[in-house]
Image (cartoon, rainbow, N blue to C red; front, side, top):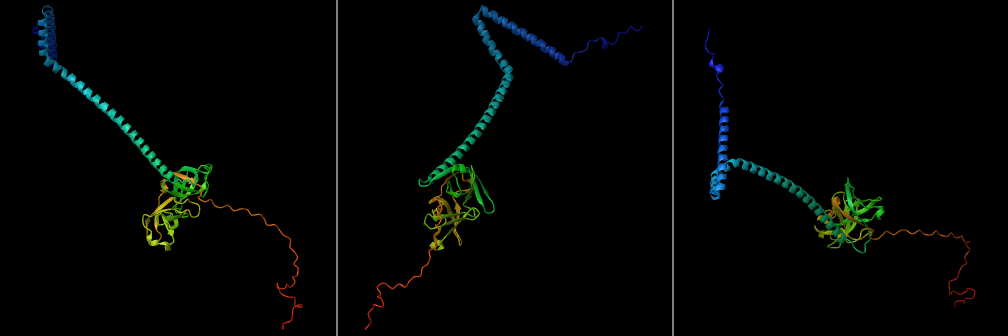
Amino acid sequence: MNWQSPPSSRWRQPRRSSFARRDSNLALFGALLSGVVIAFALLLLLIQQVNPQQGARLRGAMLDALHPLISVATAPVEAVRGIGRWIGDHLDVVDRNRALTAELALARDEAGKAAALAADNRRLEALLKLRRPERRLVASGVSAASSANAASRTATISVGLNDGVRPRMPVIAAEGLAGRVTDVGLGSARIMLLTDVNSRVPVKVLRTGWTGLAVGNGGTRLDFVYDIASGSDQIRVGDRLVTSGDGGLFPPGIPVAVIVAVGAGSPLATPLANPSGLGPVMVEAPWLPPAEPLAAADAVAEADLPVQPSAAVAPAGAADPATAAPRP
């Protein structure tokens, strides 16, 4: 019989790995450290009861000894707390930045509205300065839109028949004369701008008093047509044209245009009222309303009278030939 023992590999306990041994050693060290700490704490408690002063000194010495260990142990915690505070501060800064950006956008919108309102107020003030008590205001409105084609230059205003607007009434903007009414609806009207080819405005040079016509050419400027014999060589760039009041439609003294070019032909002028942005406007009654024709009464028919032969009538003071004395 084979009495040999089985291989020792079957009966030998398996060796623990290095990780298991390390965990076991750590657990043992932890338990030992905990026991030492508990024993030291009990010793401190006992000393505190027997000799309070000695216990206070031991507690101070223990704190001094454990302070480096506590600092090292709490360093990761403090680092995590610092990271959390940094993240919180960053999020607060981001939220504050977004709020400030929204407030800045709102402030810009409000500033834009305030600037637009201030511009409208300035234009209204300029428009009011053009008012004269001797002229009759019909309605006030705003220019809604302007249009232009090959030669026509028109704009639409926000007042019409319901506001008393009628054709041929002059329209005045803040900068000066804008044109005259051509077509009228119930709540709006179309006006012919100064640059329309059919526009003719009697004007005069404010500096010299020479009169003429500001004629639209279908573009962006006006032709100043006047009597060349009145001194064409003295028209200067920068001369301002105002309405003269001739013709009775446009009131006198309203700014119209400024001379921008003087050449061999008619001087060119730029309208003071921008056709593409008239803004607030006033519609006034014609300066001198056109005279309405009066209906004459029908003539009364008269009967024909018979014609009688007329006798020869002697001149006054002549003597009768039968009684006249003979000449010597």
